[in-house]
Length: 294
Image (cartoon, rainbow, N blue to C red; front, side, top):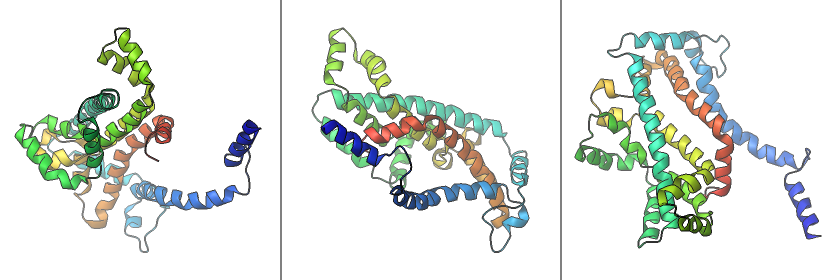
């Protein structure tokens, strides 16, 4: 009887067919969806607007005469720069790949230690990590600059990488998954002679793939879209990133005339983020279901 009642409750919450009661849910979700998707659509439409529609009053949300002139002007502007676009793109690709790979390892290794190792100060370290998630990036800009200067990373390629590796939310997310792994599983592996690195790579990482996928997306977005290092830490033009390059080109126009180039650049920067999220969305949803973030 209890099992039958439970199945009925599940069916009531998530019915197999459309029910009138679901209209309330749609009425709540649709305005939220509109608020989230309209800015993205605006960037897409603006990127393809001709000059006449950019200056139109009242402004048009949807373009009626789409054109690729904004992209053409953007790429024409790349021909007048000191260094070719490929250098900036190469810097962003390499630095992003390093950040994603190293950031995933740091997050899962720290989560494993904080979850499965017993040592004095473990809870304090995790609380400090959680507390650091509440700081806005602007609040740590000056301390971060002083650290980068002190360790000798100013005006080096690694200034694009090292600051991006500090991601407290990644440790927090992965730890929620590692906490759910039975301690007996880890102890059994240790009795069989597995080292901590063996446990980490062969047991922990395969079992927390959803969390790692989410961390990879966050790391990718932070690194790919970052202009902080290029603006604050790096003076050598050939070491700067693609995001900085696109932003500089899009700001070369004046007022409304530069909006089209800015929208085209924003769309080019946005596409890789969307593609990566679509490829990993199922794992991201799993992370949100099982982690502490609801």
